[in-house]
Length: 144
Length: 333
Image (tube, rainbow over the protein chains, first blue to last red):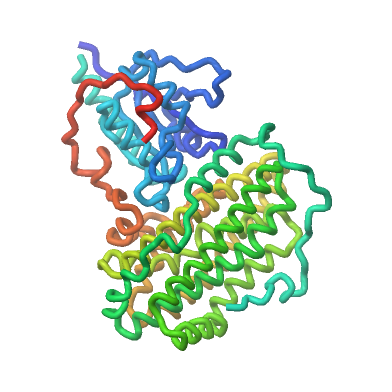
């Protein structure tokens, strides 16, 4: 039996403000970005991944999941490989705090692993690195 | 309150744009302008929609000291919203990078005026005219509140566009929170809950404002020299420290008598970190001083508790089900 030596693969979306990209960068894990513009080549997931995304809106929850992420997950191949979701947001949005994470967790039946505010504190980075490490090891061993 | 034309009160005037081109929303330079414009429009609200009068009974259960504290907190917030609506957001217009950015600032300015008026709705619903006058008199005489206003106003009328954005973001994302704490506190004790609903709408608006102005600040800083970047960073942290020191004293003035000062300070640290992040800087306060009272946090955001998360909470009882087919409209919640 092969031991799980690979680290978590991340797929993320970040708008031009780049907060989620910055958080992902700090995690230091292999990551691919969902393209911002429809004119770009769509991303095709090849391996299981954890999705990291910001929450949009605040307008009664409508449009919380960025359109680019919807387009990505509407692809069955991409949807089948999602294993968990990490959401970025701001508690000042009240009920809308990290709502995109809840929506995707429910839709795709995967756990909402963690929520960060803006681009995360150093403590968040550490918690997510450690959490993903455990989660991915568990995933790799149970899926074999 | 007659905040008598603060820009003129300090003997300076704000530069106005010299030429105006019609705004073409069909030629977008920065998608963020459209996204934020749409978000602000969708979030639009007016105080008349909130049934504040349902709080009258609850108001009468507060002690006279608690009522006075609440009135003072709200006059302080009124002052900040007045500044941001009549000076702050307007002062950003001449520096706008895109024409659509100008439109967003006009929206922000208008909503700040709605916020300022909202507090008057609370006052007229809950308090008597002498109580209202008394609270406004206090806001004009409180040294720390006036100093806070003066520090921000000075930067709004200064001639550095990036520094104006820093001052504006710190106002939107940090300075309001010594005041926002109290309605969240009352709400956590099931008091003044309609008032709290209204404050949550204000908090949501300020979050978009702080995010957007901070983003435009970062865009403006992008092409700057390393020397200039360092200058702005030093300026930002110095201003934050200056405002923070004053904010601690203001918090003591308000909350010492009810024993909540330390709790409020944690809320200040927590929000100062987010203000810095909105400006693209790393958070400054460590977690042992940003551990906001969970009751306050859940009054702010009902699902903010850690147990919600798989990594940090105790709940690991999720079931992997079968993922369903999704279409665009499924996601449009």
